[in-house]
Length: 244
Image (cartoon, rainbow, N blue to C red):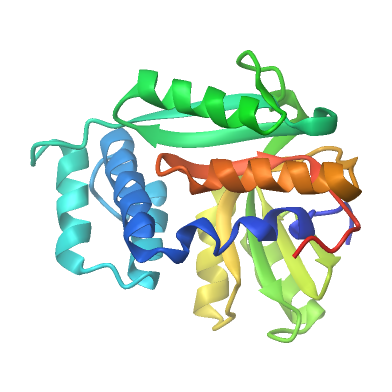
C-alpha cells in the first residue's frame, strides 16, 4: 500500500450534479456518442464505449436511448456533433483545476467556463498550465466491508493494477489507463461491488486549504460540476475540514 488516492477530495463530486435524472441522462448520452465517434460502435473493441454504456445501464437508461446515442456517434443517425474539450485553471489559493467537457458549441462553453471561474475567485489558464500536476489513472473505489485486502490484491494485481491505497474506509485501486477495463472486469467476475470506477486524473501533490477559502473552492468545483457540458472535474484541493 502506498501513495494517497485523495478519495476524500473527489467523492464530493459524486451525486450532487447528477442527482437530477434528466441532467445525468444528457451527460451519459454525450459520453456514449463521443466514445462511439472516436472508437466505433463495437462494445467489445471500444473500452470507452463499453464503460459509458455500463454507466448508462446503471442509471437505468432505456436501451433504445443507448442505441440511438451509439448510432449518432457512428454517423448512422443525424446529430451527435459533439467535441471533447479540456479546460485548465486555478481556484482560490492557487488550487489546480482540470475540467473535461463534451460540447456542441465551443464558443458558448468557453464563455460560460470563464464566467464560472471568475465569479468564484478562480481564473482560466492556458492549455497545459496544470495538466502536468496530474497523472491519468484508472481508479476503482471499493468499500472495505466488501472484501478482504489480501483477496482484493490477488484479484487486481493479477489483472494489471499497479497500486492499492487504503483511505477513509475504502480501498482505492489504481491502474494504468489501458488496464482499467481489464481490472474492473476481473472484479465484476469475482462478484466484488465497487462504489466508483472511472479513468481519472490523480494529483501528484495536493494543496491543503481550510476555513472560508476551502468553502470558496468547494463552491467553485460544484458550480463547474453542475454545468450540463461538464463530464469530470479534477483538482488538487484537499482539506481536513468537514464541509458537508
